[in-house]
Amino acid sequence: MKTGLVKIFVLYLLFVGLSCSAATVDTVLTYSAAMHKNIKALVVRPQDYSTDKKFPVIYLLHGYSGNYADWVNSDPDKTSVQQLADRYDLMIVCADGDYSSWYFDSPVDPKWKYETYISSELVSYIDSHYSTIGNRSGRAITGLSMGGHGALFLAFRHQDVYGACGSMSGGVDLRPFADNWDIAKRLGSYKRYPDRWAAYSVINLVGLLKPNSLAITFDCGSSDFFAGVNKALHEKLLAAKIPHDYASRPGAHTWEYWGNSINYQMLFFNRFFTKAYSSEVVKQ
Image 1 (cartoon, rainbow, N blue to C red):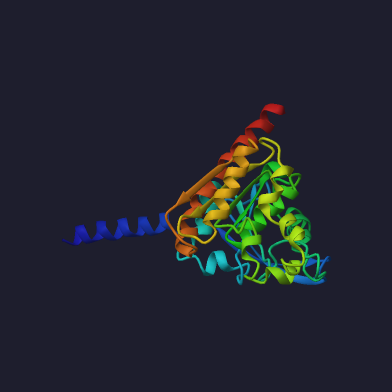
Image 2: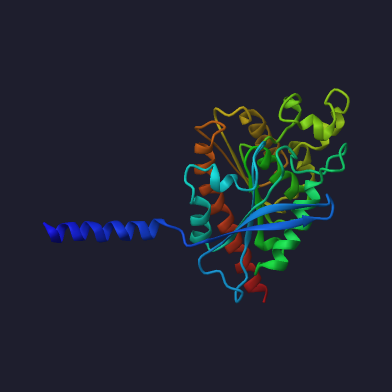
């Protein structure tokens, strides 16, 4: 009887050891010269992080009303981000986009310059303070909801910075939601500036892409209020013959959905990094 209990206890300890993450989570304070303020970010380093090796980086963006810590504090599995960093041996940077930046430089309010911050200032900070692959072959960006819009918006417009991008339940067309989520505070009213709203919507940036210029993955729950605009983006990419991965899975605009979705996205990005690394080795 005692031998059986010992075996069960040993198996339990083994399970706990395998399921726990050894990744390190740093909270860093970065400075935005564009906005004249300090901004926090979470930097997740895998277990075997070392300055003797260069690591790929995934930038992970939060949704409306959230902050840089959401992917740790709000995800039902509090350690999923750390576990993914360990599993794929990469870094994850959880950026802060304030509660309603939509991750662009506001044309009406100069205090909101999150396109400049994320794709220039934050990327430069991470590359100068950590051992990273400092080019697009080692960078990806994704996010949920507002952050899904932001990730595709930034990647489409900065293909020299990111080699891969994704979106989970992203607001990829802003125009149907003119009265929601403080978008009008960043762009001005839709009624007055319809062309501006069109220009800042991801769905209208497809013309910036060439086939295989970016590795793209995005998904949305079938019960999500953004399901329609994501399907429309998928169809527009198909018409433009832009390769991409797209999925519509059961689910709504919830952490339960995003906590599942992030696993698919990380697998996609890991494959991109592996392929990019293999190409670099062949060139050498």
